[in-house]
Length: 335
Image 1 (cartoon, one colour):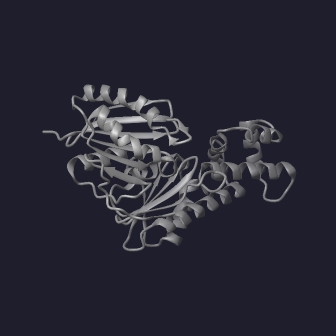
Image 2 (cartoon, rainbow, N blue to C red):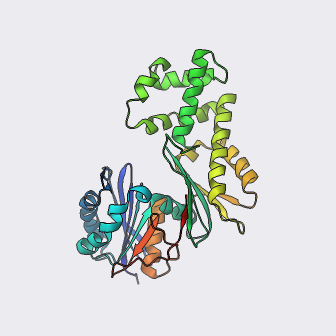
Image 3 (cartoon, rainbow, N blue to C red):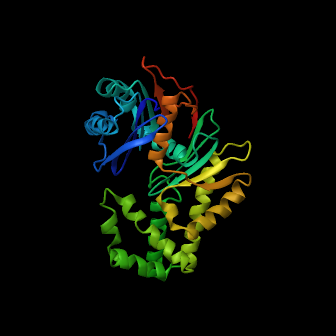
C-alpha cells in the first residue's frame, strides 16, 4: 500500500530538479530543466517557476501513476532574501494547477540541511561556489554567512579561487606570499595573468569563474605548496567559524558537510576536521547523506505522513495548509 503522492522541487542556478513520489514508496519519477528560474524586481519569479514546473509535474504524476500530489516541497536558492513573491503566490498557484493541499517553501540551505542530516539537531556547512552554514536545535533556525562573494561566502569556492589567483599575482610581481606553482596553474587555466582583470571584472558570472580555480588550489596544496596549504587552512577556519555560530550548544550535535567543494578531498577535509575539533570539540563531523533534492524529498515524505517536525521561519521555511494558514511554529532566525 502507498500513501498520498508528493512533489519535491530543487530550484537552483542550473535549473529545476523535480521528483514525484508517494508515501511508503519513495521517489517514483524525476525530471530536470536546464533553465534557472528568473529573478526580477519582485525577487524569484513565481510565474516563471510555475511555467516550468506544472508541465513537468503533470507528466511525472502520469508516469508514476500517483494522481495529483497532496503535498509539495519547493527548495529554492535565494528564497530567504528573494522569496517574498513565491511565499505570497506559490501555495495558491500549486493548489489551483496541481491540486496540492500542503506546501512547504524552503531556502535551499534548509533542504541542504535536511538532505545532509535529516530532521535532527546539528549544523551543516554547504560549500560550493559560495558558503553558508545552517543550524537548528529543532526549535528555530540559525544561519551564518551566505552573503555572496563580495561581502562573505568566506571559505567557499570563489573565496579559495580568488585567494589562489591573488597568490599567483603576488608571485608574478615578486611580492611576498606569492606562489610560483599557483602562478603556473593560473596561466595554464586563464592564460597570461596580466589579462586577469579584463577577464574577471566585466563578468556577471565572476563567482563561478573564481570558483573554477579552487580545484587547482587543492592540487597545489596536495603537491605541498605552502601557500596553497595555508589558503585551504584559512578556508577551513572560516568554515569552522560559521559552523560554530549556528551549531546547537547542547549535546553532541552532528556537523554535516555538503556541496561540491568537498570533492577536493583530504587537502581541504584534513584542515576542516582539525578546525572543527578545535572550535566544536563535542561535535561529530559527518559527510552528507544526500543533496538538497534528497532533502526536499525527505521533507515531502514527512509532510504527507504527518511526521513533519522542522520549525518554521519567516524567510527560511514556511508550510501552508489547505486554508492558506502557516502551520509551522514561528521561530526566529539569527543571522
